[in-house]
Length: 225
Ligand SMILES: [Zn+2]
Image 1 (spheres, rainbow, N blue to C red):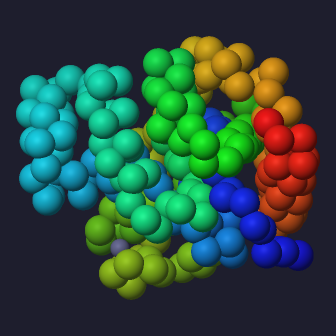
Image 2: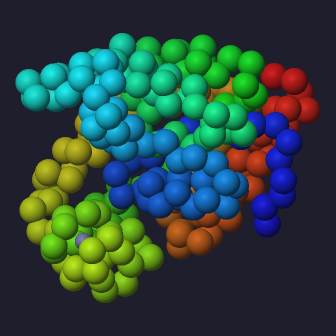
C-alpha cells in the first residue's frame, strides 16, 4: 500500500532490456504522483521545442553519433529544474555513465536521498521475454504487458517482433551489462541502493519495488544521509 511521503522521492531505475523497467517506472511514478522522466522523451521534447541543448542534441543525432555526457546532463538538468520534480521524480535511462551519475548527485544536492533500483532478471528469461516482445503493427510503439491485443496509442493490431534474433538480443544484453556495470558499482555501496528480483509476475515486482523504495527512502531520511 502506498503511504504519503513527506520528503522528496528521487528514484533512478536500472535494468536490462526486457526487465520491465519502463513499465515499473511508469507504475511507480503514477501511484506516487511523480513525473516519470525518460531520456528518450525529454530528448524528443528538447529537439521539438528547439532549446539550445535540444539543437545541440539534434545535430549530434543527425550525424549518427551518441549524445555526449555534457549535453545529456544539461538536458536532464533543465528537466529536473522544473517545479513538478519538487516532490521527486522517477528517472528512466539516466544516468548511463559514471560522469552522468556524479553530475546527478550535484543536480539534486539538498533535495533528499536518491533511491537507486536495479531490476535483476536472469539472462535466459530476458532472452525469452525479448523474443516474445510485441510492437504495434501500425505505429511501431513497444507494447507494455497491459495491452492484450490492440495498441493503446492508435488501436492498431499488436504483432510479435521478428527482427530480434537471439544473437542480436544476446549482444544487446552484453552491451547493456558492460555499460551499466560501472554505474551499479558507483551506487551499490549506498544504503539507498536496492536490487529487485524482476523474475516474477509484474504485479509482484510492483509491490516489491514500492516497498523497497519507500523503505530505503524512510531509512535514509531517518539517518539524515
Ligand atoms: Zn499503434
